[in-house]
Each structure stands twice: as C-alpha cells, then as structure tokens.
Image (tube, rainbow, N blue to C red):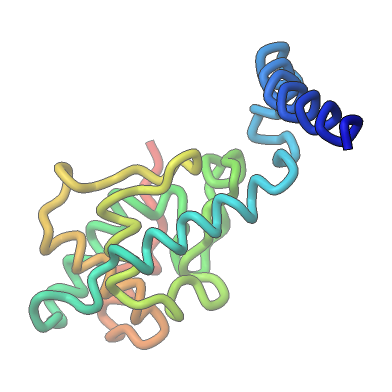
Length: 172
C-alpha cells in the first residue's frame, strides 16, 4: 500500500511538471501544419458543443425574409467567404493555410444540419484557437441572424441569393 501511495504522489507531481516542460521547451505543436496534440480535437469539440447546447438561442427572434437572406449573402461574401468559401469555387489561399481547416460551408452539407441558433452562436462568439472571430460588436444582431439563417438554409436558398453567392470574390 505504501508503494502505491508513493507512486501516486510522484505521479501527481511528475505529470504537471512534465506537461509544463513539454510546453515550456517547445515540444508542443503550434504551427498550423503540425499535428494536433493528443486529445486536442476531441476535447475542443466536446467543450464547444457543450457550450453551444447550453447557450445557443433556439430560433431567430423574428421571421427571416428573403431580403434578410440577400443581406446575409452580402455579409457572408464580405466577412466569411475568404475562409469558408463560395458555391462552386476553390478554397482560397487563406483557407488552405489555416489550422484547423475552416469548413467550406457551401461544399457538402456545410452547416445546413445546424440550427440557425447554433450558427448564430458561432458567428456572435467566435471559436477560440480556430481563427473564427466573434462578430458581436462588428455586426448588428440582425446581420448575424441573416448570415446564420442563410447558412442554416444554404441547401434551399432563393435563386437570386445563390446567383449572388456564386460570383467570384474580387481580388486586389
């Protein structure tokens, strides 16, 4: 029993010191091209989903109109497309260089399986350590809901909105 207790005490001391030295002396992967730390992806996703489940609004506070979707498309093109892409277009150089890779929201299912409330939470709050910024304070509440509704219904958008979204991004 004594050996077990001594081993437990040594383990409780060694693990935090080992973790400290792992980070302190540059062994932790920090480059976007580096592989994630063990359990990094699963722990981050677990924490994110728990927080969203707890805080995300269930529905927009008002009825979303076609005009809101058109506004959401303009805002998406201006603020989101450089990372999350546009229908029928390749990833941008910025999106290719990010870690974790930003989801391409108009390729595959995107976030159409997420509620507008879940997408709104992500737009409003951002997601730590991913490059996804929080837009609270930069965009109005209605603008954030417009983008969120646009993305939640991306598989059934009005033709005029899809036409606007399918235009190539302007390059400088």
